Amino acid sequence: MSAKIAVIALSAAASFSLPAMAKIEKHPTPQTQLYAFHTRPASGCPGLDWHVTVDPNKAISGFVAWDRMQHMARLDGQIERDNTFKVNAQEVGGTGKTAVITGRYGGNYLAIAISGTGTPCDDVILNVPRAGGGLGGGGG
Image 1: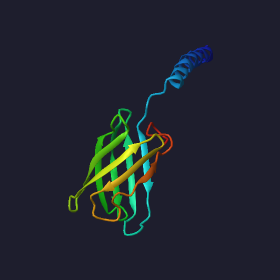
Image 2 (image 1 turned 90 degrees about the horizontal axis):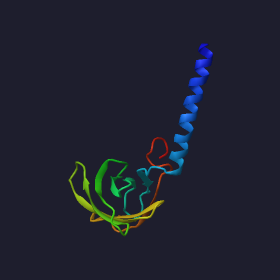
Image 3 (image 1 turned 90 degrees about the vertical axis):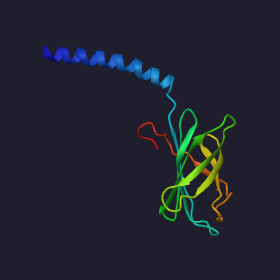
Image 4 (image 1 turned 135 degrees about the vertical axis):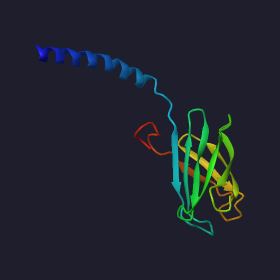
């Protein structure tokens, strides 16, 4: 008798979850996207590590780090309707310098540049790739 109840319960659970899963696939929930990139030192610019997220409402946040992650600047702002952004990056600790991060949001890449550092890194445009799968629980 208990085996029949278990089979009925499993059948009910399977028939309930399959339509729910099909509905999810038809209308996926937008996810926060992760963009990450490391550049090597070049022409006086130290290696840069970018870690930037873009939320479904186009809020952009993250950090850029340099000198093997010994220094870091946080960034936070909003992507405009034309998919461009201009946000301040405030150094955490250290001298507390502020730089400006500008760029364009383009789906699989962020075209991104830093300026105001007074280094050869200024105004070099980088294409920072989107990490596969976003941040929805297992991809990125």
